[in-house]
Image (cartoon, rainbow over all chains, first blue to last red; front, side):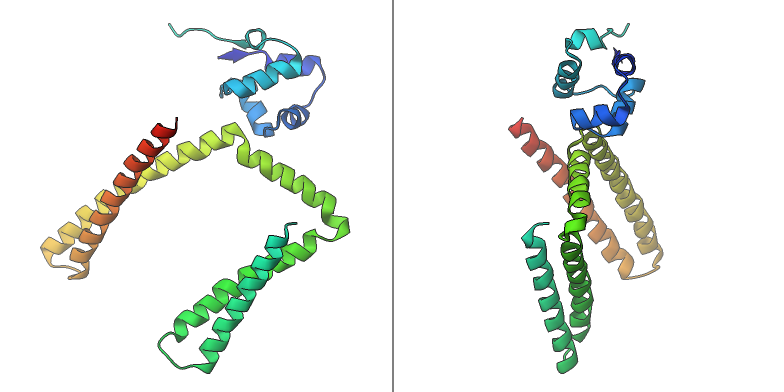
Length: 66
Length: 148
């Protein structure tokens, strides 16, 4: 699943550490999310969406596998 | 720092020192065990006491709060929880394989008459461990499945 997390974070000049602290997760989790290596739980997805004031669909892009 | 750390540390030290007294003052075949318990209880007890007094000092309180917060995040971070679960699963499978290989190796030893009677007992013991681990896996799965 692709996401716009890195783009949104950089737009707002937030460091990974700051975002991690705000979401109560580790910095490595933010790194893995941004690289697309890890898909968040629905709870974390909601927290991220709330943090950026957007909907989940605006941040996470689900593409069905062919 | 929680008071329980102080009380646990004191209890460890008291029991450890009691074991030392028992080891020094008595001459039974328990002596080795008492010496072992003295070391095993007193060292962690002293560590707990040191931790308690170190982290309750006013100049260390802020750093301790930061560490606690960091530890809480590390413990509940969902990616790390997933990694712990996956690594546990891998370790479980590896151990099943290791038991099978060791059982095979000791069976061959047993047939050849080497390391007897240890080889025979080892096959028996490893077999019990293999079944127990497999059963624990199934039981844990069933228990978790019922809760979800």
